[in-house]
Length: 391
Image (cartoon, rainbow, N blue to C red; front, side, top):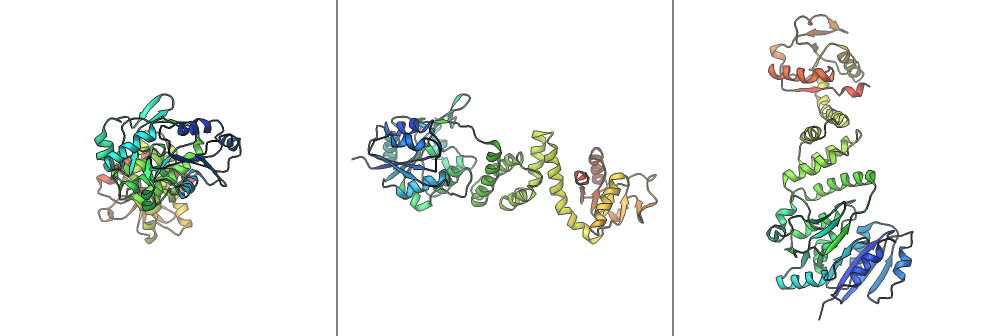
C-alpha cells in the first residue's frame, strides 16, 4: 500500500496561478496524498478559487500574512503523512513526480530526494544545467552544496522524521530559506537525486529594492549560521554579490559580514570595484571603511598628514574639531618644504619617521602617485582620507 504523502502549498495572492499548481498535484499518478494549502492572508480571489474544489484530499488552512516559510511550517505541523513534499502556488509538477521520486527513495534507501527543474524565464533551461552528472548531484552533493545551492523547495520529497530531527524552515531568513534548510539536512542525511526534471518553475517579477535588502540580510544570516560549511571562495563570492547593493550608510553591515565570515572586506571592495567600475559610491564606501579603523591611530598625535594644499588644510580643520593634531605636514619635494600651517611644520619625510601613520590628504588623481611614493620610501602604515566627506 502506498504511504501517505503530505503535499504542502503556501499561497498568497495567486489567483492567476494557484489552479495550475494545485491541478498538477491532484493529477499525480501517486494517489495516496493529502494536500495542505496554507493561505497566508490573501486579499484577492485565491480563497474563492480554492473553495471551488471538492476533492476530499484537500485541506485549506488560513493565517494572517506571515510569509511562505511560516505557511510551510504550519503545513508541516499539520501533516499526517510519512513523506512531505512542497509545491509553490505558481509552479507545476509533472504527473509522475511523486511516484518516481518515492520509488527511487525506497529502492536506494534515501529519506530525502530531489530532482532537477525546468526554469521558465526568458528561455527554458534545466537547473542544474549539468543535470545528468549523478555523481556530482548525489554522491558528492555535500561538496556541491558548499559552493552553491542546486535544490529547489518544489523538487523536494522528504520523510517527516527528517524535519523533526533537523528542524523546519527558518522564518527569520528573508530569502535563501530552502538553501539554509538543505545545509542542515545534508550534514546529517544522504540526499537522493532523481535525474529527470519533474517540476516547471515560473519566475515571477519581484520588487528589486525589497529583493536586494532581503538578499543582503539572508547572506549575513547564512554565513553566520553556516560559515563553517561553505568553501572560503564561495563565501567571498556571496559577499561580493552583496557589495553591489550596499549604500553609504551600510558600513556596519559590512563589518558584520567581516566578523562572521573572516573574509577581508577590503578584498571584496577591490574586486567588485574592478568588476563594476566605475561605481563611485562603492569606492567611496571602501575609502570610508578603510579610514574608520585608521582614525584610531591618530589619537596619539604621532602621525603625519601628507599634503599641504587645499585638501590637506580642509582635512586638518576637520581633525582639529576632534582634537587630532599631526606632528607635521609632509611633502615629497624639498622645494615645497618649509614654513608651517597654523604652527604645524611642512617638511620632507625623515628616515626616523617611516614607522608613523601617514594620512594622505590630496586629490583623487594624486592619491595613487603618493601611495607609490610612500611604498618606495618604506612607509607601510598609510590611508587616504575619504575626501567625499568634505563635500
